Length: 447
Ligand code: ATP
Ligand code: MG
Picture 1: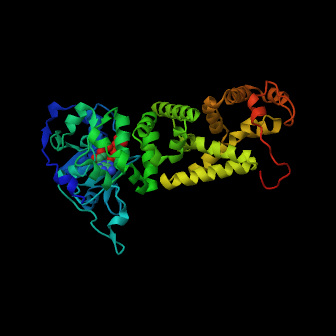
Picture 2 (picture 1 turned 90 degrees about the vertical axis):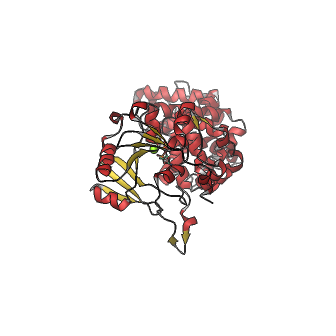
Picture 3 (picture 1 turned 30 degrees about the vertical axis):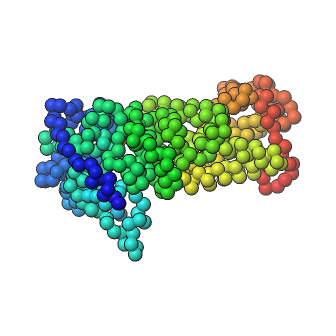
């Protein structure tokens, strides 16, 4: 079944000599060059491949440099002291240069699928069809998009294009290699890669490549949640998150990755849409400025609509505030992690960001100071600012807290009431009155 996609695409090699393309060794990392030269000097074929070649041909800066060779992993290991072999089914060599890792992969033959679930190939606990080495032609055909299947040859600096990738770069389009439905069935994550790469490169997805989404999107439910987590980081935290998100929704794939988000947006929750769009735009901006970004904040943004609605609904039914928030978070995170496995350290922070939101409404001296010194105050406050579209009251609350942080301790303390009954100066936000929740008094164990 796996080989079907390949038999219908006969490789027609086009070699683009050095003078006819723009890839210069200046733009290739020193580490990658060392690996390429070393392999080549030792008598092996050595190529830069995949996203790096694609990005260099577009005049961009590759995120990572991958190398393909006919040397086996063991042979690669013999050449480099700083080399470790990784992967069970696909043995790969990682050559380590300080913070930079060059991934060196042996040409793979057919019958192998990157990202296909390991279990499928396990018989009696034994991994079968593991590490099937192949020719460079076969290696090209098992890749996903034509633009991702070009090889830069270190021996003469030419580019080898087996499947028409150059044409697609010119047309700014993503075309799959082989029959799209077959390729997505082999590995549904390729649908997400189409969306992500289109967003990143500003390319369109070829009609033939996007047509199967409607029918095959559901296969993403079978993809490993840990892999979807990695993929969602690449989508949302690599500098083109807003565009990825919009395309994911347009393509109808959002619901398979973030069902709660898709539901809330389908209900017409425009405040959530504004929150998500602004949150992603801010994240993209931070990435562009080289600042750090945290997955927790972004996942908290994506899932907020459902958490908030559930918590409020339960509070209306008389559930204790803290319990309502905690349960809403648990429910929403629980559902989400069946799709995208968000590690515990992030879900913990998400829950904190959410549960601090109602505490912004409590403008009493002790509570205000406790919140200001909370380790997660900054993230929670940034989150509150993003929620401005929810209502004028929330916007006002954000302004109040922004102002409060500017005031000297004494001034702020003097302006705040000691308990919930009093009035605060500077004017306490309206949200406090409107949103104050009944809290059953004296109920133990609900802090
Ligand atoms: P990025 O710029 O985000 O790194 P990339 O195309 O380099 O994009 P990688 O995940 O680094 O993406 O993969 C490197 C190469 O491996 C790809 O260019 C492609 O040739 C191949 N590849 C990756 N994932 C798949 C897949 N699921 N199916 C087939 N080929 C894949
Ligand atoms: Mg890459």
